Length: 209
Image (cartoon, rainbow, N blue to C red; front, side):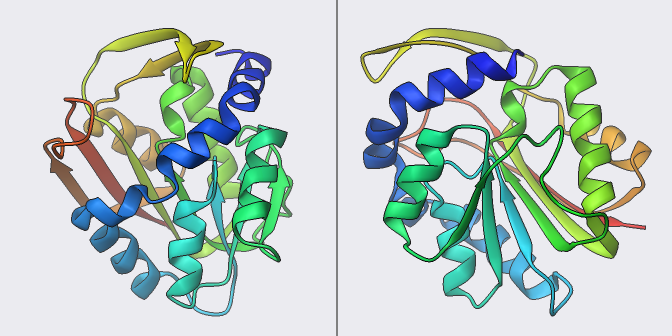
């Protein structure tokens, strides 16, 4: 999907999205459990990037667990609301297809519902970027809607947007990560919580070989 459309759409809804999703993790125990497991297993001493961080609810959760973390988002509006939420947090404008990071700079990458706007070829590029910026043994945690459905929004939070949402098959994501040099360590799927859209969720934990 066109990164300009993604950027402009999230810029348009940044403030409303932040109000709606800032406390998103409080009602999602399995999300918190996966993030906690990631925090315990990620190599020590190096930063973690929350890629497609939005208002940085995931970055803040990891930071509160003692993980050195930064946020990266293609939307300057989302970067702004993330910085307002957690002053002092390192949040940068950038695309997961061309991360503003050096080779081997990171110990971990979290992509929480940020792969869902990318088409197949773009996801492969993102996995290659994750491999590039991670040191050997670095950890990736990806979360996404599971399935094969494609949804399009032209309005969100009463603002005009143009966004495609791709549900992904866990085995396809696992194969893409494996092709980029990762070894799968864990896979979890769950049904939707009461306050969520009625889609299955999937979580993949993978380590750079």
